[in-house]
Image (cartoon, rainbow, N blue to C red; front, side, top):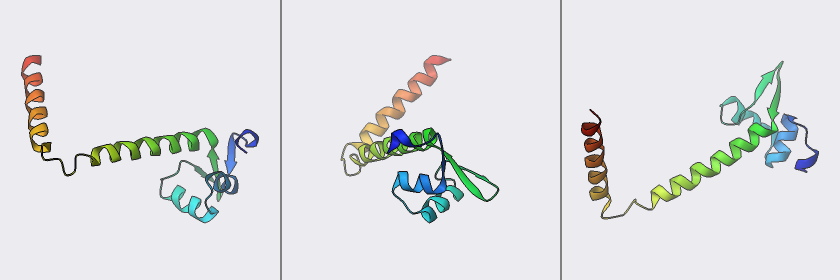
Length: 95
């Protein structure tokens, strides 16, 4: 399906591509969550921008999951304190 899609997608094409309803895509675009442009009451989406948006969402989700690993870590405060010390040393040595 992706090989036959044009570079600029309509609301309906974007909804089909994302496997969402057109209403959800429009709501998310209005909220600024999905990259798109409204022109004369119609929405247009760059397929490349949609692909980038999807990829970046996945990367953020991975980072959030990784950060969650430390949620119950007993050494987290010690790690944070060491990071703060290292940062302070870097600030002092840069002067």
